[in-house]
Image (cartoon, rainbow, N blue to C red):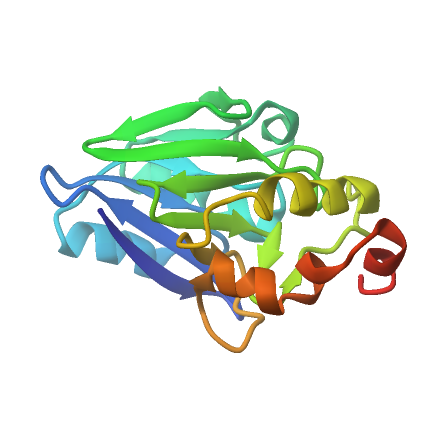
Length: 205
């Protein structure tokens, strides 16, 4: 499994994940102007099968149709967020659903808070793509339409903090002091994961 982290726009991260054996590929969160993503796929002769959106916000999904028109593929999102994605979704996923792309295993986690249907993905039990649920040193906003402070706190406490320490966190934005980090280190340093209760958490966001 290979993960290519590509910055698109000002601070968004898009990801190209592919199987090294047969080059089957997924793209995660293509936002505005994904031309460099398309170029990477074509120049490396990758076989794009799916486009996955961690949530419906425009800066994570506006490149869906541009890529799909260039390279035929299917779009994946959660049921809760997928109906809000322009251009439609081909496959809806739920909590704990799994997808194999070549020899790459993807497990979906429903992680509401930033939006009702935000998802994170565990890739080959090595990487954790978090979209706008968890950043390096922070978490996603809950004051936008569909955001929910209590759900975000519950997601961080019950799902994210219970994940294995070795997973590498790949966030949806370049907001931290590094582009990725282990979830173990984030448990020790990320203020939003260190909050002991909802009251403390509410003062951070």
